[in-house]
Length: 431
Image 1 (spheres, rainbow, N blue to C red):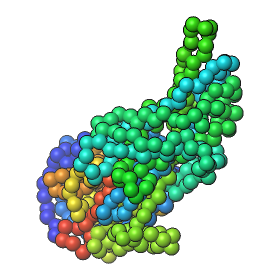
Image 2: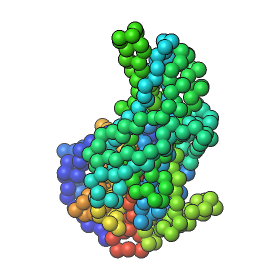
Image 3: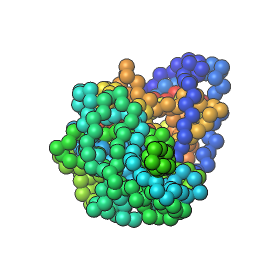
């Protein structure tokens, strides 16, 4: 149904949110729709609504190497199955001068302090038992990018840590005293490159067993650190102590690296079709709902009804969009389990790029994608994106993905195409 309205566009545009964009390639956006309406201009527009057809696809191309935050642990989602997250990380010395441990110096202890950003669990307990295992890698991390499906060969016979630690909900770090298996690497006189080649790196798992509590932890890799503590006898009466901080995982001038591997179990969930490799090449129709799962789980693709936009072009060949927003109502409005924000991309594959409304800082201050807790939907402004579809008579698809999908396990179920309150675009145009 269409309505003619008067509206101040200044009341429509919201606060600017500048996004950091990580995409497989850059595509220059068309300037169509980039100078639609001056914020102070009063315009006469017509309101319309178009409903969308969506489906869920398996996300097989999530880059996970060298991000500032990562996940470790196990997370159970009643709707979308169980996911395990494993961290692969390099360890190296803090500069290019290598490691120079004087003769007679003993390694007293080695501590890994994992910096906690957030703890994720459905448990209501105030503290959690974390069972952590750290094994040495059998092969080094290379120079290529790593994705959510990637793994490296691990030497399970060489274990640097296997134990439990209790953390409170407000804990800021997980401090692990590694066993003496790692000491020989820390007590050498060796070059930086040789140290890195010798130790190769580690694989960390947390609460991997079904008997462990389902808990996942977001780790800040910049403030995570590995420290070795040394002592050296000076004479019969005195001992000198010192410590040395190693680089663990995060990128630096020495290009130290890390990545996360996510392993999903979709059996018995709404995503059961993706339980097999063959099924992951398929899609899940959106009549009942569409599913956004992070951690290399799923993406959602929406398409405009072809008959609608061709009819619109025919009836309104000179229409200019004053406003357009994508509205995505959710099946559950529980903000404690929902992602904070969704991102919209133009296209459906690895080459999809963030829609132009997000990148046009000089004109659009309203792109957000955040959840509206009162209306129980996600809202994303897509004025330029829709203008380009109408102008080119071609819909490349709009892909939805969860922001922070590498650092949070929170998921969202979007209502289906067959429901009254279904995904749609609300628009205002003038001629």
